Length: 218
Image 1 (spheres, rainbow, N blue to C red):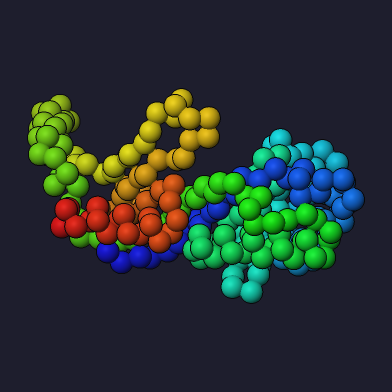
Image 2: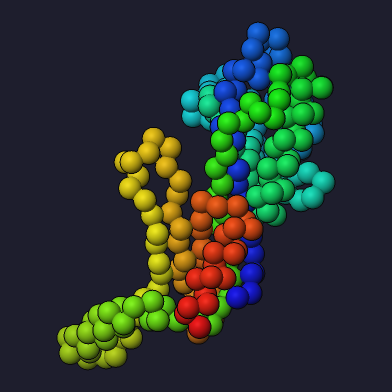
């Protein structure tokens, strides 16, 4: 497996945002202005209706010392942060930013205020793996579909498995992690052997899971 790109390295830290500013001493527009100055965000709230923690106060297209800061969104019960480097980098950047905001903006922050964390990792990669090795039934069904279409359309259209999704019952948890997916890149020929994968894991754990997945399909 050859990693070709980190598409997303997201952390969602579950923290009661109101507790970061418990007495309202920090003025929200001042917080926004300081964040824009620190990270050079190109998109940030400018209207009163955009200061809505229910839908998320949105900042995008920023930068920091290690690269692009794709997105920050502040919700009532959490803060989301995206980079395209690594979820560990995203996690550290969020912690460093809250520590900076405590000293510079008067916010209240202790690391133990973040009770839980969720991750989203998205990557692209190249691989020689063969999805038909997942289960012979998939190959049999693919051959059946190919055969039926040959009869009805008069040409050979070779069907094969193109992706895998692992998920949980989304109704079983109020806050459910996303699925684990591996699929061929859309609009690229199969011969390119290029894939996209998403996982509710850290970047490190995601890549480790993909390597285990690939082992059985080579």
